[in-house]
Amino acid sequence: MDTNVNMEKLVSLAKRRGFVFQGSEIYGGLAGTWDYGPYGVELKENIKRLWWDIFVHGRQDMYGVDAAILMNQEVWKASGHTGAGFADPLVECQKCRRRFRADHIGWTDNAGKVVHREGVKCPECSGELGGVQQFNLMFKTFVGPTSHEEYQPEGSEHDRNDNGSYSVTDLNPERHYITYDPDAISYLRPETAQGMFVNFKNVLDSLHPQLPFGMAQIGKAFRNEIAPRDFIFRTREFEQMEIEYFVREENWKESFNEWKELMLDWMYMLGLPAERVHELEVPEDERAHYSKRTVDFEFDFPFGRKELYGLAYRTDFDLKNHMEHTGVDLHYTDPATGEKLVPHVIEPTFGLDRTVLAVLASAYDEDELGGEKRTVLRLPAAIAPVRAAVFPLLKNKPELVEKAREVFNSLKKEMRVEFDDNGNIGKRYRRQDEIGTPYCVTIDFETLEDGTVTVRNRDTGAQERVSIAELASHIQEQF
Image (cartoon, rainbow, N blue to C red; front, side, top):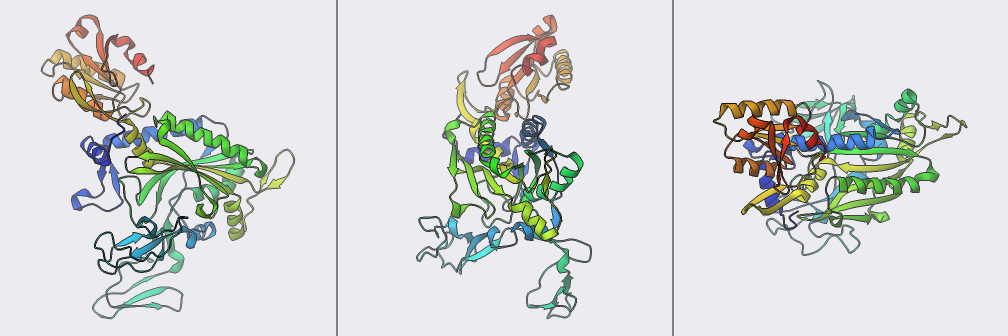
């Protein structure tokens, strides 16, 4: 692991080798959006698959769901997301009109609370900054073909119609007006948690789980960040791996500590060095409105120590609020005693994009092998985008290429493999090292004679001869 890795190196490698690209790049990009390329998709999917295998398939008390991104707007009123509790402090430069999060430009006191600070100027143009406004982070949208908002022309007036809808009437009669129905408002979900809470009763009725049990989900969430930054760390569209674990109130501390250890085990499994992972007990005045206790797991990224994951004790806040707003009974009934109760919730949250970034930062290394400098991603074999690459020693020898294809076709039934005959053998090794491929398999003239191949280890460069018949099992044993 290269402890001196910087973001410039990571971003360069990510683009050069097809892990991550700027969103809408040929149009100049769109701030806070990133596209995963062929190897980035494989890495991300492998992380998701491993997470699901461990936390869902590996347990008997976990149930997976995949809730809709668009939800009834009343969900977000009940959860508190439409209020001040889900807003960031925004300041605007009076000169260049750039907008910033107040707490990111020094407008905080010693306790971290946002305060107006005289003398703090715009980071871009040194202009004067206006007052703090609360900016809600949810993306608003409209559901239905007749309920939409196209644009607000300059010099227009807002009117509320008798039926409760709104219209924008252009002062220039040659331009059109727009209308929308307030009941058609929806939001791109800012978190995946509420999709599990609103399906709590459905899971109870269909599967009859007994406490404690959990619901797990992997999915996209969206937040209109004022200042997205640091590559894929803070984005406007991101993916979460999240669990809502339902327990009796008297058991929450025990369950909280169990999940804390499980989350640490997961991070070490991904290859994150223990010395770069830190636990932070979040003080009461900085916790989310629903949390009675929160522990943040921070990681030493190249740009500083920042939050990677979170573990929160949400009490019974969400289920009670949804009961109050809907009138639907969300009590759990103990099958043995008939006791009815509203479960409390432990919530482990894993940001997938931040996981990818932490994994890349941990795996990145620069060393010297065979007298040559190289860049290598020392990814754990279980999540590497490619587990083995197959080479013919010489691409202009049909018998070697044919045999290499035969080996490749056999291996790909067992694992994710890649066929590579581009450039000399040294260049192929360097390319696969940067991709993070644990093993390279070379078919040479000796292969044609005795049915063995050369297997080269990514991390050490060590090579050994392995029979084709035992090749798949030999590689699988290393995982």
